[in-house]
Image (cartoon, rainbow, N blue to C red; front, side):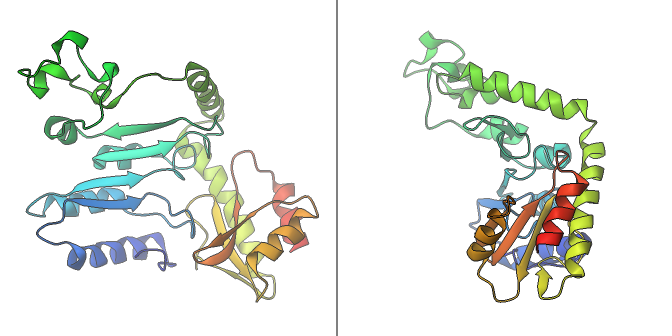
Length: 260
């Protein structure tokens, strides 16, 4: 469990590594971890976890959920450290629903064999005979996990969205802006009576989660929605979550704080 880690990124990284060690067994084959937690907005130490798993006798696979990461924070280091780094294009990338991406490690490509295949998985459609080896049948890169039809309109939409993001600066430059807006909101919440932020420090990215006294999160969402402000309620833990992106302006942050 990592959703209770509410301190600094450094303290969180140390706690994750400490909790992981006794959780690993001789039979452990896979560790699953989000890069950026969807509920608290906390950042996970993916590269450090990958190094820790390399010391395990069976070197478990590391699967990382990057749904809240791509388009919000730099992902290259984490994607390179993970065996499977999967993300969606419709959240922080502002792309169309129904399309995502996955990055696979060289080790996984060398040691794995697809269980669901299609014509796009194969190097040659005619080579899938019973006597053919996995090395001969499948593509040697990540195409071996492609199955069949791709939706080109969705791909074109995501490509356009990514180009628009890149036009606003590098991932590192965009994160500076996202963090600044998130910190403004987080700090403003500290000054409101009866409001509690889940993280003890300004968020490492753009997810800002908080509670309003004893008011149910769903009721707060509806109350704010009546004023034209839409944020989300979460169940685990019960809280409200606002998101600051490069598309968020200072006036919107101020409007939310005034309404609260």
